[in-house]
Image 1 (tube, rainbow, N blue to C red):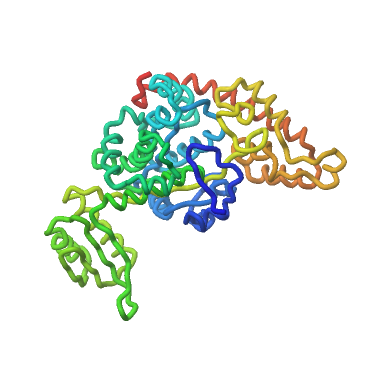
Image 2 (cartoon, rainbow, N blue to C red):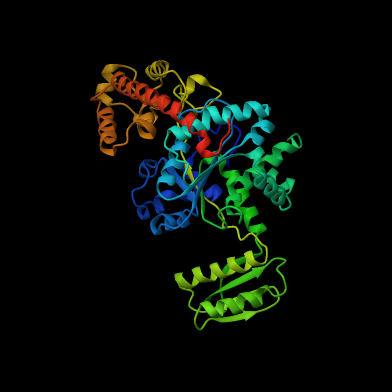
Length: 443
């Protein structure tokens, strides 16, 4: 049976390997060797998949401009599951990205029936303050609320022209009972992802969105509608002799569009051969990486000059979900399953001491057979958050599997680290609160 990805419901027991075939997600392991100093989530396989991350690898390695974009729906306490996304945003900013972060208050108001005031309070208190405390800097960052960003609202309206209810039903499983505002929130998500590419912001630029697999429906919708919004489509084709060539096709492009494009290309690529018609242009020449880049740049320039968008399809990465402390998915709606970033440090440590582990039934069995760290929420805390050194992590894993250490020892280690982290983080939150104005947040 095909898996269903629902951005608004718990997605437990996903078979991540099947997502490659079922939804066209690519394995992240394919691009990992090309990344210098990858984030620990990348090294450890926590980030398991991607769409078009090659464009971000190029920006990372060549120090070209790009954007990391993400958002948080303000419906409850921010916990260590949300910290996964925050950590990635900070890492990308530290590696050259502009960080754009939205608070999805329109979505929360529609889907969760929260008041606008409550949406703003939760968005600032739970998410933005913790994000700043975790290392986000105001330089090269932009924070906003959906309800207050006119560019997002206007773009969502334009995107809606190219999306119908049948498409939303196919992607999200909406029924006749789905509220219209809930449907509108999906194109608002698309506008969140694409609006940084508007000329009033960064213009067409590579964008990466780090998400859990359950958010992929938003990515698929946005990538599809981005293509529909563009004037031109570039395709690689082969002729009857199996020789490759490029074809640029136009949708409602002005009459002189391809003449302009032809003239520009001939000035940029030596000895280029073209065939121009009213609705498309074919390019026959050596389309090496450099020439392909020139072609795409020319097409983008012409579209922008003619008033188009020239959106670049957003890239995305997909990370595994953290297990809840009680088993299952970590969720804001199940307080005992998670540790909030604002939780009392000692209370959090006690939760860890009561958490579900991958230990055996008895001490004797544990020493004989060893533990099962792949089934342990405590070991996951080490992998995702509490241990940065890979060698130290491997040592814990080996000691667990060999029966050298018992669950109580691991729990104590994790509890101490959780308490120390939260104590430090909550002190940093006090400083972060005072810095909100540096990010343009009036609260």
